[in-house]
Length: 555
Image (cartoon, rainbow, N blue to C red; front, top):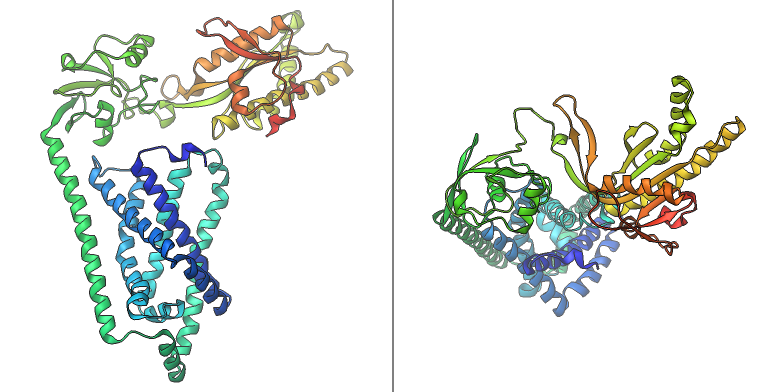
């Protein structure tokens, strides 16, 4: 498994590992219950097979260790939180996780505990009769749903950043809905059958003997064990919340006061960045790069308390210099106040111009294509404006569909265009850019055949293709802003396109894009280019005819 899946601290890795063990057990348990929809023999046959595995001494230790570890780490994470503010998905997962023990403890006591202590035959029929037809059956059905939703959220939060997850999510949603529905249908079907048999006094006696039904004294003892286990859970939860409260009080005593100009005044823990202070207190604070010190949109003017801050480190100083920041400007994601501070947020999401969310921008790593028609000025000299516009529209009608299959034309610039391939990740964006360049070349060849048939000269083009960091957003006056892209990647793609003229090739594609796309074609002609306005050499592959790119680009 890719190591990126296991990044994070040891508690995160242990929580993921124990969660996977429990999720696997729940999956097969639910499938087992669902088999009651078809036949009792299928249900009991799979249960016997599951018990042979899960009740083996080694597997029992593994399973219950995972259960205790997962619950313990959940309580530990609550005690270590700085704030109970959290995203909806995280909050839902925490609440569902805390609800699980309320029913799971009772289930374990009346099955595994009853089997080990009182030799009860805790097969599925015994469990169903124990619950049917009162409210307990619905509470256990709710437990089934809560466990499944909790596990699915955890799985999604873990895998959502991996390359293949976004592609499989639509199918996995169907599986996620099917599993608990299947289990509930099997439970209700088997429950009606068992309860109908139990209504027959003769069959009831056989069932009671077969299950070695617990005596009233045994049930009373199990209720006592269940109550004690629930008390232990509530004590553990209370202890976690007490630690959280004590830590919060301690932090408050070791806190710093921050005042926002045209905003609230808050008290926050020392050691947090100003951006973290804003986020933890629900104060809107723009930060497009997520607090990496690159975009500078979290800039503040420190009006009071600047002397108590250390001088900017290299990352912050470089970013502030790049935007010509005024005196007193700092990056909120880089400063950690230790003394009272008054700060003015230079970019605020709720600002007076009432911008839409898109105007704040979004940072992405995407493929950019810059395309230009060769010899356009000489070709159209002396032509009527109508003829020039007609030719351009025919040209764009021919090639643009090859781009818009996976991308979008950001802007038209006379006889050229700028396109971006805004897919789910950088890899698919790079592949989409390569496919588009090859398809544009093929579409142009067909268009040139039509021009030659009309007695008109062929059209030649140059294309620059690069992958890099971009900011996508609405740029312009409020109410008249168009969505566009900005960033060094646009400049690199434009300069690469300019180099194609001297080389006499149709395409120059950067090494960054080829590597990200997993391109395995011939790269022996790779060259390094010193491009105007670009601080570093850009290795790129000249391609005489983009349509001849290796078919691997379709992957």
